[in-house]
Image (tube, rainbow, N blue to C red):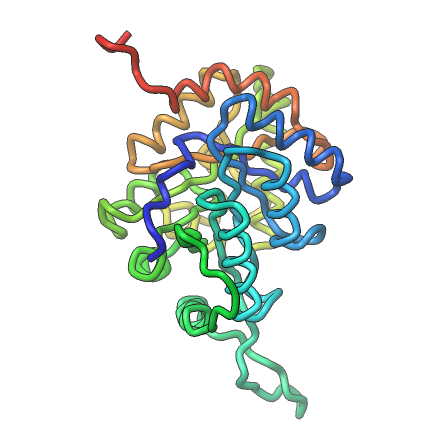
Length: 314
């Protein structure tokens, strides 16, 4: 493992997909402001916009001290030696400030035949990621080797992936989970592995409007991400919560909504359950817009969690 992933991330970060659709100049401005607001880390997803490595360069070059973390770089998009080289380069250029979160699925080399046509099959996720990590570790370094080495995390939900994350990397990045999952993950990984939990939030004190935004977020993942549905079933949710649209119980478990104090309570639940770090994904009615206003409004309530307590506990 590369080192202690707790260093530099703090306890509170921001997680966002919103940078993917924004021009580079706007992303730089926003990242610099997030740093000045006092958040310890900036996490970003990889889907249909910028690739994870290019996005990392953009965010790291726009900030001075904040940790930048991929959440996650999809292993289906690049070969292990390519990602290992990019990891080393970012680690050298921005010492101690880059965290590589990786996960996803790759097509296996084996095939099955359907109606006489060969169809590539998917390997099991844990087996695939273990092999991918082996290949990254075996990739030779032909240039400078960063010191400290960049930190790695695995996207992990199920028990076997959490075990792999603790055994082979600095820890796990969990996503679309309630605090109950955080407690389970901590128990599986033990006390030493890093655990960073994403928490979706809607900063809106109007209950019906907030739940509408939250419901759209949960419904989207349940329809498009079978592994997320499998995970919520593992947590005890049933067809009554999933079929025909997510139940109120499931939506409220996955998305914290209300004012800043309500969101702070959910963050504390994750921290009390064993998370080292909680990164907030702020949801709004327009998922293409940067939630700058909400990031600003949340900062006074949440960033003090990263400040040392005053003498006497004041």
